Length: 371
Image (tube, rainbow, N blue to C red):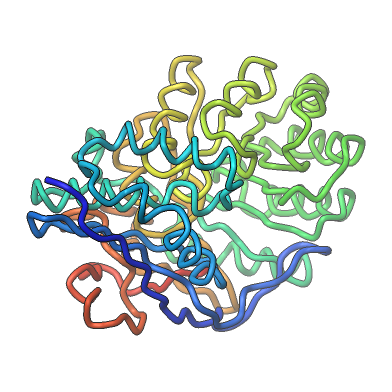
């Protein structure tokens, strides 16, 4: 079997409804825009697809296909995923590929492999579980009182745990974190995501508050450029650190955080930011060797597959937004996400795809991409 064509299909993705904000200094929810789907076709009729939900990625992917990827991929055996994953890293050396596109070919190839075997991709990766709890990952709200209301709603909807995205003000965020713990009690797992909003002194201040309040993990408080800064943070606070979400280098970069002692809870894994399924699984296995967690970052269908294949992950991340909030499609009343059953990975439902992509659309959930 050989690859005969590689295509880019632009897809319109709606803006969040209702729109939401992140911490001070960051852009809020994306507006409607053009995303892209990569489609790989073969001489035996087996195909694979992968979606980049980032607005504007359609133009970038089309350019990469025309200049680099089509010539690189056509004629190759699509089952030699390891070889082609290494080729993408070689291309990255000169192209400086956007991090969210680095793993797109790999994701499409894993989709193809699942369709060839008529099995969901999580089983092809090596299935570990068939369901996992989802935590409610908040957007940024206006007041402590509104956050507490959102927490009540999340628990009523069945979410067993809550992660805060707050304002990016270390002292205000600390007061919120303590208030939430006092509100929900000691038995609800709580996490905090700093969205890289702090320098080291402020990250330490907030980290002490999270330690005292018994938070499960403290995620990305600083930009992930300085492993040394994270090592100093790990030495200063007791709350476990979850790191290496947006830093380039997949498992290679994650290894530096682990070796330095900066990943005291674990590292992030995802298809979008860790080089596809192959990079995410390498990251997870690396973390497992050190008895650390590899927590899957973000919603979306590929990450549901990862959650079912990675043994050392704890939760599926489910974004909640607006007020009142609603439970993400595919999460049951007990807060569980169940393993996909269709072949391959699947594209998210609810979007206006061209006819050529209709056969790849997920039949189990209806939530369109949010990021």
